[in-house]
Length: 177
Image 1 (cartoon, rainbow, N blue to C red):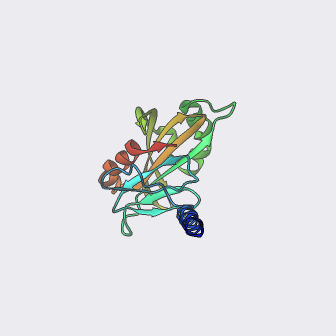
Image 2 (tube, helix red, strand yellow):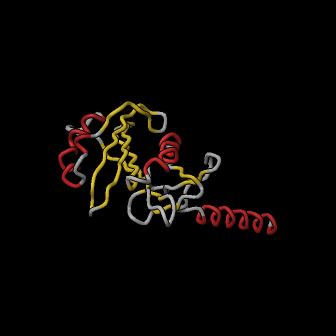
Image 3 (cartoon, rainbow, N blue to C red):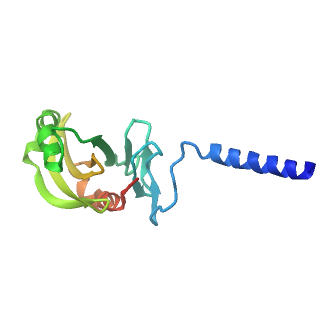
């Protein structure tokens, strides 16, 4: 009986230690080949980025950038729907004036249909200048489960095309929880 109790105690201790050691870590099951997860358990989605990208989850949002020498970056955020925002078009129109105040040129975005993690979405691409530097932005927005999910890809104007394929891959591989 004492041997059985010892085994049960060891098994219980092992299970508890294993569960505690995984607290706060991202779920790595289902990570696409050549990518790594760039989100936390607190996020309502799994964002995957190329293995060479640098993940930054210290800023309060989920984001990653291409390299130390190329700060082109992708971030994903989600907002709950409300009485004023029920569709992607509502989200864009609701935020456009504020966004255009920070990033002049947003109101001239090229808009086309797209997908975000397999969900129908709208893609907005626009140029802006910030601090004397020209940037290009791509936002892909989709509505899922009463939230608007927005992937934003930002790059210096001359770097935008070089990382666009990675950004589109990140958008394609996004998984909703």
